[in-house]
Image (cartoon, rainbow, N blue to C red; front, side):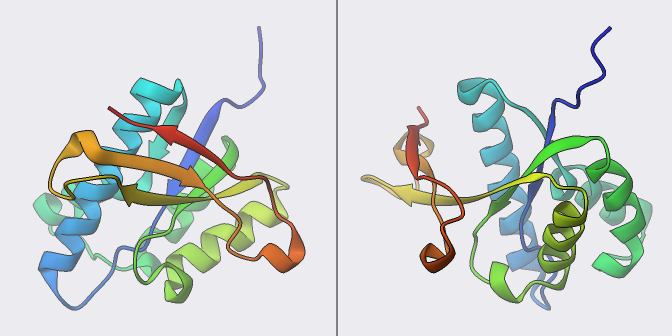
Length: 148
C-alpha cells in the first residue's frame, strides 16, 4: 500500500469585511479546484471550498484563527500547496501562515494565477497559469494549463 501523500492543498485569500468578496472568493476557488481536478488530474483539497459552507451554515467563525489548526492537519496530509493568487493574497494572514507551515513540512509550493482569454464572465475562457511571483529567487518554472 502506497502511503505517499497525493493531496494538493489549494490556498487562497478569503476573509474580507465585505461578504460579497468572501462569496466571490469561495466561488472562484471552488471553480479552480474543480478545473484542476477535472482537467489536471490533481487530487485537490480546497480549504475555503470545504469550510466556507460549514462556517456559514454552522454559524462558526469565518477567520483563519478559528480554522488554522484544522488547515495544518490537512496540510500534513498533502504533498504540495498551490496558492491561488487572487487579489489580496500577499496580504492574507491565512495564506501567509499556510505557506510558512508548508515550508516547515517541505511541501512543494506553486503560485497559480487566473487569466481570462476572451469573456471574463464565461467559464470557458479561464486559463490557469503557475508562475513565480518572486522571479528574483527562482521558485519554479511557469506553464499554462487551459481549462475548458
